[in-house]
Image (tube, rainbow, N blue to C red; front, side, top):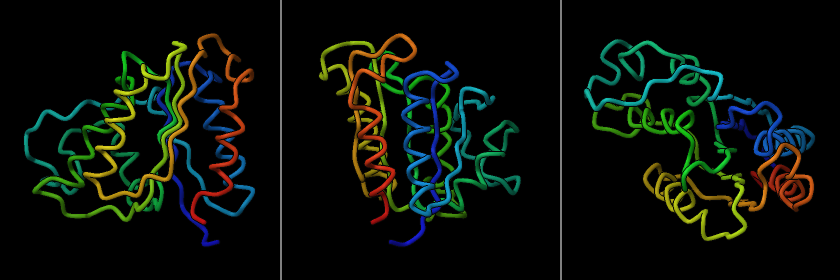
Length: 186
C-alpha cells in the first residue's frame, strides 16, 4: 500500500462530539497503517465564504482576502486524499466547513494557478434523525464536489440517530470509520 497524505476536515463545533470521534477513529487507523494525516478543525477557524470576486491568486495566494484559509491552503496543496468528517446541519454541511468548500473555487475556477493533487475523497457524517433519507442533501453535495474536482469517491459513512455526545458509540459509525482508515489508499 502506498503511503498517502490525508487531510481530514472536521465541521463540528462540539469538541469530542460524534463526528469528531469518527474523524479521530479514522485518523488513528490511517496512521497505524502508515499514512500521514492532518486534522483541520474548520469550526475553530475564521474562514469567510467566497464572494465570487474572481481575484483568486491575484495576491499570490488562493484567496485575495486574509483569513484562516491561508493556513489551510498549503495543507490542501500537499494532500493526496481529503476526508470530510462532519455533523449534518440542515440537510448539508455546517457553515464552518461550507466556507472552506466555497473557497475550493480558487483551485478549480478560471484563475486557478495550482491544481490540487488530491485524487480521493471520503465523507463521514452523522446526524440526529433516524431516517437515512435526511442525508440525501449532503451526500448529493459531496458527490457533486467529488465529480467537479475529479476526485474518486472512496466511500460514505452516514450515521443516523446520533445527537448527544457519545451517541456514536451505540452505532457502527466508529467501526466503519476505522475500516475506511485502514483501507483508504489500498
